Length: 96
Ligand SMILES: [Zn+2]
Image 1 (spheres, rainbow, N blue to C red):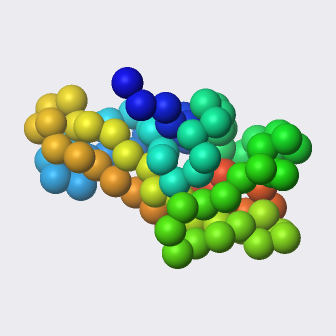
Image 2: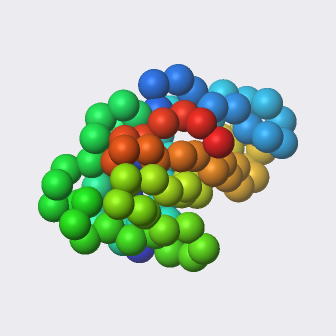
Image 3: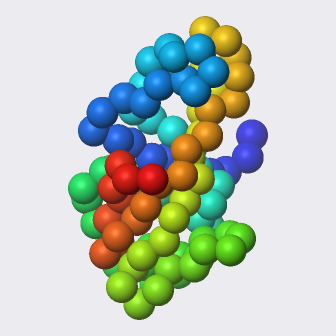
């Protein structure tokens, strides 16, 4: 089992392949795999802000802005469902 961070949205997302509701909980490996549980609308804890980096092209700025990739496996069609979402002011949004 790898380590990763959890992301929880207020509203469910839907499979881009078959349209099934895939729920509100997703994994992300875009951050530092600190076992964070990140909830939409709740600012990241200070210790995480100081240590956090985003892997790849996107980086957090001083304003706590970045885009992360979150994913899950669809329970109906078993395909990989991936979404890009914005973190703004250290707070997860549901915006692409
Ligand atoms: Zn599906």
